[in-house]
Length: 537
Image (cartoon, rainbow, N blue to C red; front, side, top):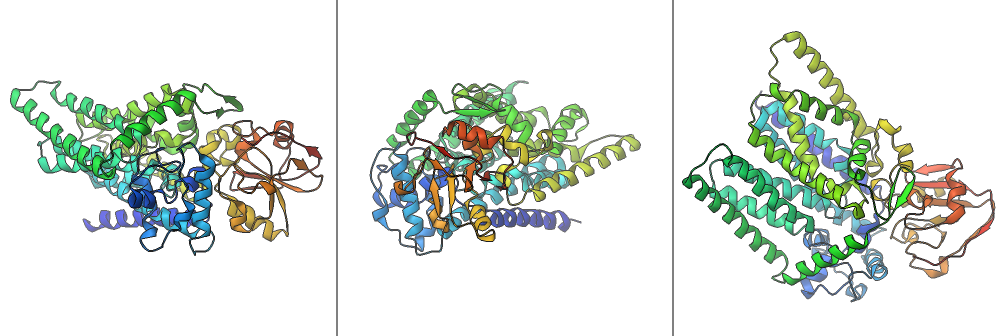
């Protein structure tokens, strides 16, 4: 019986990795991936942050996505120096690296994504470990099942964006904080410092982990303490701080000033704000309820039910003390609360991705219910089993379109574009599907309004582009629509969020499409002739 949980753990993690790899093989680069690709190899070689996009995030995810360059020689002519905000040059660089890699199509990106799948699987291991320590093997497997078939975790563990790194290393660091503070273990303090340092190298928002951990640690002393415990806690925290600072400096090649420059840059971007979309409305000031709303419609319904059950049945969960609960829920409350207040960055559920593993571990308590009446226990177990089957079906049925997942509350992913866009649904990931549809249906050319940054020509797509987004080949720009031609419009561009197609978008938005590729790119046969003339954004 001891071997069974281990076997199931390995099986679930293998399933998670295979689903992620299979999905990413079918997906083109998302918006950010193109201009993040290869930055790490430049930073390591030149020890300089003087190329576009280098300051958008700390460098860890850049280093990880550049690991294929250990075996491939990058063409450094692709790198042009310039300010961080020069997105056109950054996108041009990413396309250049893929074209000159010597590999077919975007295979360079595929290999660059693989380290992130490993990071995701590592996170899954620690979800299992933490839940097992709290609720036993049943709780560990329950939480791991929730993790491995979560559409949102599968969506972001296959991308070279830094969200999975922040989520994984922050969570693992918190685990070692929680595990080590009980005995004031210096070894676990060092491990906590290591992973929190890696989190700092992932995203600037990792700074939130430190005050949250201090608050969780303070909970240990609320029911009384003494000088010895306070000193031991101070030493434990000191080790974490010193190790994390060293890891942070090492990752920045001891150029710490680049971190603070990036912080200032992000502050200016947040202050300026990004256009946001929710339920058919576009806003430049955002909504307080944005992230809660996104959570409610992008998380599988069984998970929402499990969380509600966990709230109502908390008295019957065996094992954890209230301090253990504080370590799980304080990060959730902090991230969700702070990002809800930052209304100018309402652009994707991924910003609160770090709350997911904590909630999954907490939900694992449903596997450790101490209910004495057998009839009640049987009913609950049956209800939970049905919920798990429903949850698993949600994760498998959406494959490979994980980024576009929406739950049944709004009618599933086919209705997602009516409620949220951008990285919640349409981030440029479905060009391969467009190419396959064109080949299958004998379509020679397409008029394209694409919310993405990779050049469609990389996939052999003969296209003419609407103005409005980044278009590398200006000769392909066209504002004319001819009656009878095939028009492709990304879901995000059906609304005036980043590209304003004016009445053309409104016209097609109210038409039934020929096909919808991956729930994110809508294909139409034009029944109008129009001429648009407006500048590229």
